[in-house]
Amino acid sequence: MTTKTVLLFFLLLPQILLFAQQAVSPDFIVTRFGEINGMNAGNISCMHQARNGYLWLGSSEGLLRYDGYNFKLYPNKKNAPNSIARIAEDKDHKLWVSFAGGGIGCFNPASGVFTNYKLINDSDTTISSSDISVLFFDDVDELWAGFWQKGFAHIDKKTGVVTNFNLVSKTDSFYTPELRNIYNSVYDVYEDKGNIFWLATHNGLYRFNPATKEMRATRPKPLIKNEWRNDLFNKVVFDDNKLWLSSWGGGISSYDLKTNDWKNFKFDLEHPNSGTTNIVQG
Image (cartoon, rainbow, N blue to C red; front, side, top):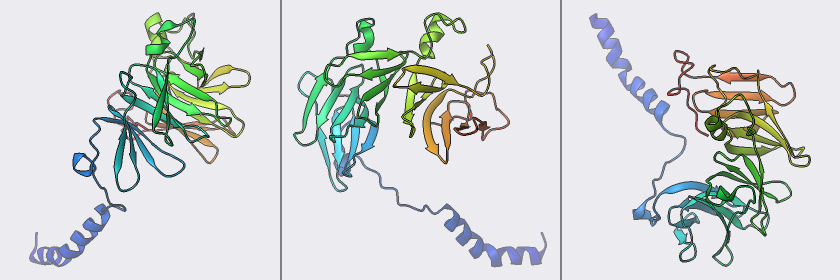
């Protein structure tokens, strides 16, 4: 390195450092919350911002409300489940929650009281202890849920009766019996303007019509056994006539609702078919 080069480097060093600082400076301020801020409610598993602005957190000790200044914990009734896994809000501003280990409850923010429901399904008695991966209210305020290994379901808010809709039938020959259960898992739901549900699932993207109860897979191509898949979807978001889906090991995929075209994007192109890279968790 010549003397001129060294001199030029040191002359430019302040500008370089300033540029680097600006480049990494965040556009927002990150504030950490914990026991010191009054958030002493164990593990946080989910969150939901209500239409009135309050932020609700599902914790291992009940529902936690944050008003922008303080936290307040609302535990469930005595001897009732307390560890909350998912939250959804109905049109009456009540919060419906699923519990770790099964079951659902309805929390009334006005009274601060939980009403708990046992899920009932005559053809599957294990539904009451099955984990719910997503809770969802549709445009007409009906409650739906995605279950781990039990497909998609409608839940009657008055009785707790569950009506199941499987992604993978028990007679599906593509999967072994064990894999049928695993691929029968729903993680997220989006309802379009035509009241069609789009499900992000362990088995790809599904289209569900609540009026006709038709469940149909939507894929870029037919499934091939032992071929790497990019469609273990965990989140679905709508933007500009496209569904964007994050996945485990498959990066991000987009599906155009008008043209039916699929596109896939991965950040690790050196290992495109690996379960330890290209993981996007929505």
